Image (tube, rainbow, N blue to C red; front, side):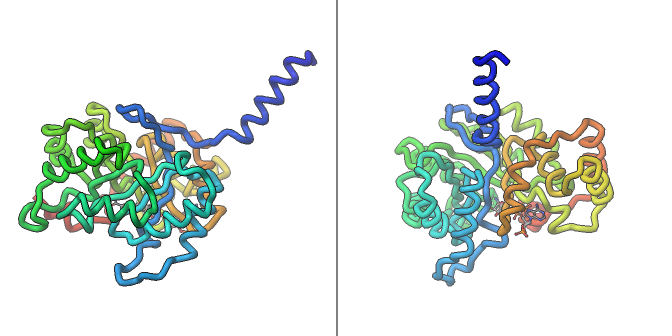
Length: 310
Ligand SMILES: NC(=O)c1ccc[n+]([C@@H]2O[C@H](COP(=O)([O-])OP(=O)(O)OC[C@H]3O[C@@H](n4cnc5c(N)ncnc54)[C@H](OP(=O)(O)O)[C@@H]3O)[C@@H](O)[C@H]2O)c1
């Protein structure tokens, strides 16, 4: 073998081992984010009264970072921002290599205090992404409307306190309210997405308006709603690919949404999620999950609000 060719081959092999598998997305303002995030809500969620640091969570975040999750998701009402801050410090990974998202919820009526408090909890000077946790509030419930919150978030963006601003659980009509007044583009809408909540109308709308969709609870059919119509297909497709149903769900999600958040307390599950980028489903497998999933509408989070909020 020619010597130069051998060196190039060796470099290519080494690159495969060290290069992160996780793709990045680039927002309209040029900021990049790792496509997969490690969540610190749901089963990590703490009570506000619990002032103890959850060391199990700190260790799980550190493990996730070392396995290759460079994007961490939290929120001011998960009460896990302090754990995220400690894990960042203890991970010894330079802060600028990480992408940290938090959400405004508990402090909706005072977003300035909200981000100030989140930054203090996280021991950071800035977050990478700041989201409005949900559109389910107004002047009557919180003394403030979506448009006013957005304007304050724009000023936080202009002060470099956050590199990206966006929303979560927004329906098309809620996003339109933001787009009408936005001087800073809403880059992301974080929402529940899995075969039982496919939101195809939102997918088209988001694409048209250059908004990235970030899927949470991608594993719902094997975690929250285990006996649904998609299970048989998942099992067969996983067997055909000699993989797990979790990887099939993640590969299905990653092919449809640009970004995904999952979580686990187990290192092998964290690895499984990162490795899901190696799995490609065929068109017929994807179509089968689409159609079996659309036989059931099941939402794990914000059920009442999605049903009742005008
Ligand atoms: N914006 C919002 O309103 C909102 C709402 C909900 C969630 N979120 C965010 O999204 C994050 C993820 O949500 P989620 O927890 O519902 O997501 P998920 O990833 O669909 O579910 C996580 C659960 O799946 C299990 N799991 C993980 N990998 C697995 C695997 N390979 N095989 C089998 N089970 C596996 C985990 O348990 P093990 O520990 O056993 O692995 C955990 O109980 C939250 O932490 C939060 O940051 C945002």
